[in-house]
Length: 231
Ligand code: NI
Ligand code: MN
Image (cartoon, rainbow, N blue to C red; front, side, top):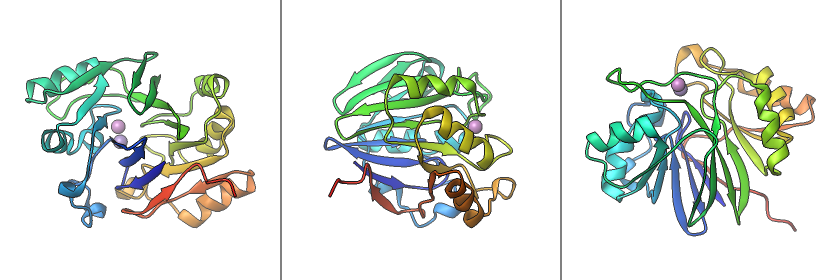
């Protein structure tokens, strides 16, 4: 699958010819000014929780692309009231088969409220099982022992973990999480956007390396193909 980083916690995936977008916080992100949201394709938009740095441009992109927006029950209700018509609501522990693969909603240890203060339900992470690879998108979360379940469910090809600390786990806990998930290929997110989550990128990559794991830090707008094609 092709993965594109749009900054903060926003990633686009091309899987089985479908475009999937997660947490599209772009126009509000000062670091993502090079990204034009009108060029982003989204058959699906997944929203992990209600905070503005994740909900972001969901409404605008969803209306332009007629995307199916997938999120928890409370966020979907809120979005429907804002005129988003193509939706699917889920909640923690639930699985659903889509035309690109299966998604499971996984618990995130965090909070969730909408920009206007409405309740935002449970914060979530997502486990994607697809014919082009499996991955875990953790959302905003603390390290939790429950992540061991992910390693037991299915082999993940890679995991996308927050590493910016303060609001979520930081680098050291992300390394432990990587062990819990039993996946040593990690893409970092939720760093550098705000002063309080600024990290030393070289140090972070080195710390992972010393633990026998790989931390991939993409530039905003950069795409990679994962899992790596076997030679
Ligand atoms: Ni948050
Ligand atoms: Mn956040």
